[in-house]
Length: 178
Image (cartoon, rainbow, N blue to C red; front, side, top):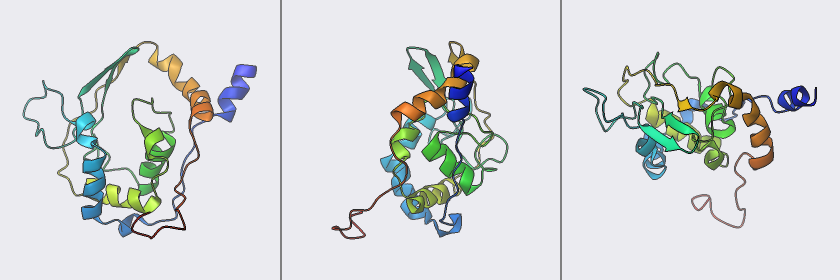
């Protein structure tokens, strides 16, 4: 019963952004994409035939002590990428580590690092990703121990390990500094 209560209290959260996706500037988003090293993880796997190595079509293996994670496709492909995601889905994934289907993402996806990004900056990144060429490359499953058993307990880890979400600007600094 205690485990059930803990899982209920740590159920995946969703975001309700106050910024409109249309306010995103793809050029500014490209800066975040490059600075964040998105392609470093989301590049195609070495064995992916005919894939453009400059597009984040996913499949690249990320070995870890619990097994191998495979980064997903983050091109705007409607079926195998993030093309069907709303801006709210994107913010929820980036800040809460929750999929559009309501599942916890494993922390191999560094959502903890993006929790303090402003919604406007996330709108810029989203706008840039939506300008990329859509690649039909379905995401590979992870090869990790007890994936189905571990995922529900990620909410407990998130509740204990993740800091506050959202960005708090330093009012003593300029807007461009923040």
